[in-house]
Length: 203
View 1 (cartoon, rainbow, N blue to C red):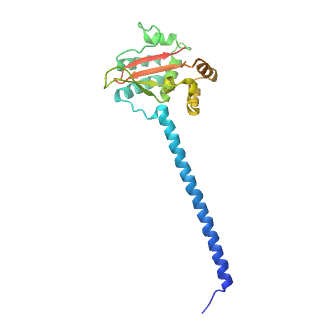
View 2 (spheres, rainbow, N blue to C red; view 1 turned 120 degrees about the horizontal axis):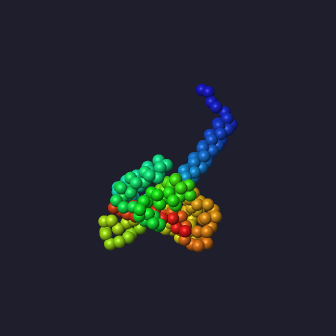
């Protein structure tokens, strides 16, 4: 009968143990990485929800938002007339627009074609909204405000919110907001019934 020398057996046993220890160590590292990754995903998701990503838009609000975005992406501010029709009202623009709101928007746009206004609409909708209660109507007492930052304490933003702010305004404008402790950019409001109630730029 062929026998393996005892010394050889011991060497092989030590080798097997070393391999097992190495594999166990790698497995432990992998487990730690997976757990850490899951925690990071959880924290990131929580931060996104705090920013307003968990707001569920009513169908009427979602439909009007899509119509406004379609008009904005067209590059032709005249297309906003469709959004006004879907809304049923012309939003409060913060300036006199009773005669011709499209002309008024062009006049208040730096390029005088309204494209600056359209770009602001797209930027606003790229941010999550915040839902706020308003009025006594239980079924339709919410308004939806874009961007959510318009309702945040501007001098107490989180790092992630600061990044969102810089996506909208220059560092100089952000510094001015913090100094004055108030919102100084566009604020868009859609009511729960799908009416576009406001689109103003605060100065």
